[in-house]
Length: 340
Image 1 (cartoon, rainbow, N blue to C red):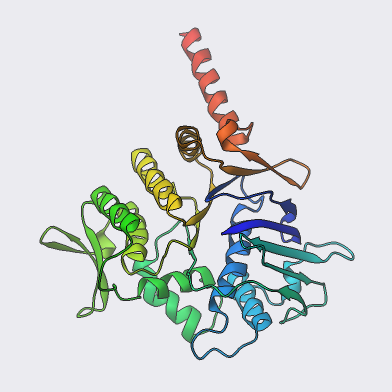
Image 2 (cartoon, rainbow, N blue to C red):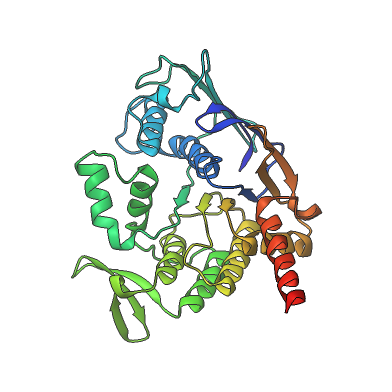
């Protein structure tokens, strides 16, 4: 599990540091403050360690990390990640629960390869994944062609990694007990299964004995099905880290609540989650989960001076724009009612 992280002068992230992290960690804030950027930064670091020294890949770790940053953020040179300003240097570090760590710096003269690097992280057998707001099933061929064949910018590395993960064949034998229960709950939500049809070379949605084109399937169903598939093919394991950007996208509030309940069960079994959201429902539901289960749930939000603060959602929902807008609309409703 990721225990701590620190980023300075990393794109829009002027400075953000964590204290102790938990199995569910929440990031909120307005547009363009760096929520997705933070998720992708953490993903790039942890996924690089997972890809390093696997199979026939003989690249050194600094090459793996440099390539992952390059294709995740799709920049011309690594120095483009450094926050603009004379003498600025990007500094990043992550510490795992076994107290091993990774740290690196990028200067304004860094081109394609990181030179200042420390890494004594333990070898990771688990896989981590980034789940974007939009589903990828209908665009899987386009994503792979763009990222692997054409080597062109468009769909970043998080999309390519996700499509490749979904293509992992379903494993025979018993799955993790917690995963099997979670899969049952997920499949009840969309009353079916998503499968890859090797005959047509396409994803299909199966509901009972009926089959439907993935293109005619609701966005929310496809989104839930992606997590279900990754649990079913065992790409994810109890030591995985899952980064979710806007879990509320394309989902009804009831489905959001159900999904977060499933996430809380998976977190209890070891999976770590980092979630970025704009949704009041997500914040409120996670607050209720933290209170009912009496678990620490770190929440990160901008402080207004280019820095971030960390609070514990178990102690209450902190003052933030999402809640403030909900209160403003409630007050407006009262005013309208009084004028009638």
